[in-house]
Length: 316
Image (cartoon, rainbow, N blue to C red):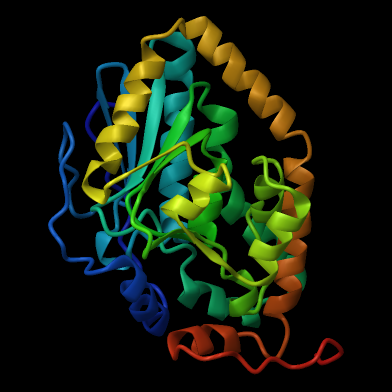
């Protein structure tokens, strides 16, 4: 049995420095005092777990990196989810889960870009395996958590962070019209969308042309924009997002547990029918770009707030 407090395992790895500065403009100051939950996580953990009133809370715990997704965090996240799974089926009375980032400045700045930069040194086939492991370490929540998962987007969910948010069943976002809450900057960075980004957008209710525009242009959406597109369920002021997500979770937890679990299972079975195939396609497509000589230029361009100068299609 996992205790109601928290798992503490990995050390925090710092993301690509220039990119972090760029995220800071969107996210704000990472040192802003964060709100606390029923339990307060220690500084050495990358993922925390707490329970209150039939609602579980998973927190990505790396505020100084805007909760960037790292390999280490993925390992801890997967470990937590796999340890929780038998509880849901055997003894737990948890009826909904809230997924959030530490603090109120960001949900997640996305993948660790320093690590992504280093993948240029690997073979294509090794990177395919590496990316699949990375994707599934976070997306395993769709197979292992049998109750609704609600993403609380107090601030930006960028790249892989946006894909993780889209993998949740419901989303509550900040209503600030000037700050993005869902960003898909893959094409600006020099890689195709990964981690099921295209698949999840297409199965969120967007039309194909809407999903294509978001991904081809590397667009970021504010809370009101995401709400109009049907990508988030509710928008509230930033300091109320986690509270509203918990309120929504409690509303769901008050309903019939068998009915809720059955419906969420059926929804995911339909939505995820082709997800693994999509993840394999994404991993291969991204691995090809890591092998190109122009890999890394997009990262530098974003850090320097300019357009990237990529090589043409037929270049190595």
